[in-house]
Image 1: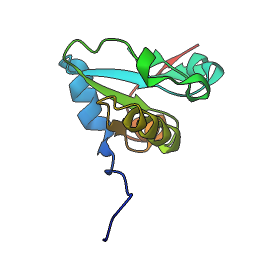
Image 2: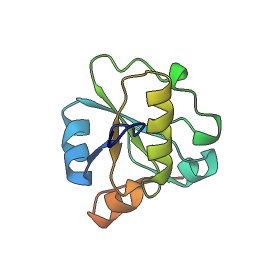
Image 3: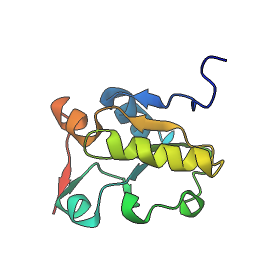
Length: 112
C-alpha cells in the first residue's frame, strides 16, 4: 500500500496571494514565530500564536476566513499545520517561505 501513513500535503500560498487575501478580508493570518520575533517585525494584521505553546484548539474564530499560518521560512508553520491535522482542526494553509518570502516580494512589514 503506497502512501500508507502519509499525511495530506499542506496547502501553500505565495506572498502575493496572501496579500490579496488579507486585502479582501478572506484570510486570517496566524504568525507562529516566538513573541520576540513577532515584536521585531510582522505582517500587518497577523495574530501571534507561538509554536512553542501552539494549541490548535485555541485558534481564534476565523469568521468564514481561511486561516493561514506563517513563520520565518515555512518550517514552523508546517509543524503547526501538522498539529492542526492531528487535532482534526480544518487548518491546512501556510505562507510558502514565511515572512522571508513576504519581504523578498517587496511587501511591507510592521516593526517594533
